[in-house]
Image 1 (cartoon, helix red, strand yellow):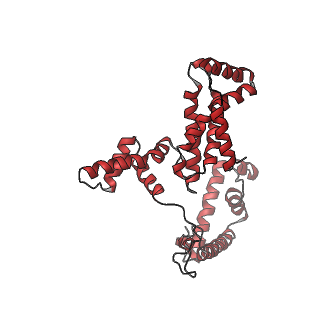
Image 2 (tube, one colour):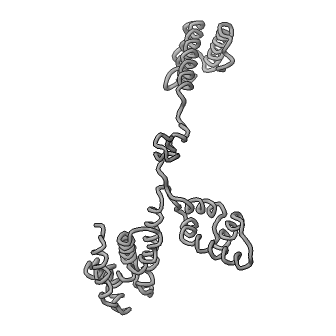
Image 3 (cartoon, one colour):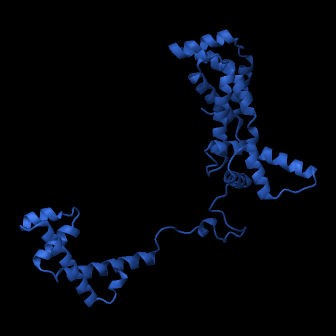
Length: 291
């Protein structure tokens, strides 16, 4: 259930009053949850480190997400950390939990930054949360030298500093430079102005092309039907069974039915196609358009 502002304040107060676990107590609680699925031990472990989750959530408020949502995501990350924590590794739970809390919050921020997916790879995530900071650093240095960095050069410096592909930097700069706009918004303040969606090209087939294609297909079918009647019964049967059915028959099966060799069936088929082509060439000046 979503937290309202009063619940956030109450949760924060309870977190600040929660016990501080020493290393041994923390380890025993982790064992109890891992080995015996002791929910009371889990609850105690989560409560003890909820202050850590809240503190980390507060660092992401600048991205415009509601504080209560950030805290909920931080809590989810904390629970994931508790579920995967291995006390045998000799690491404090707080150290291990930081990564899971941060990852959960970052995923939430990126999912809700824009309707268009901002990024999914590790390099894109690194750019999303570090690009503006690194960019400001290089711009300050250039300003101190009395220089102005061109956009392309700035992108190259950022890519090298963060260790990501240049293309990812260019893409992320575009994503972070503007916000989402409705396609139904008008292009001017005039209520009669066109909506932006009207400028999107329809990738579907155009009506005139559909009609033209249907006309050509029907005409071709008619020519083929006439050409079939130029064949004798045996040739027509071979062409139909080899080309005009859903499951074409083999030369061998037709040979067995007609008491002919497979090679003879192949010869008859080739001769039938030759007759059909001659008929079509004789009766249609537009044949070259289709064949």
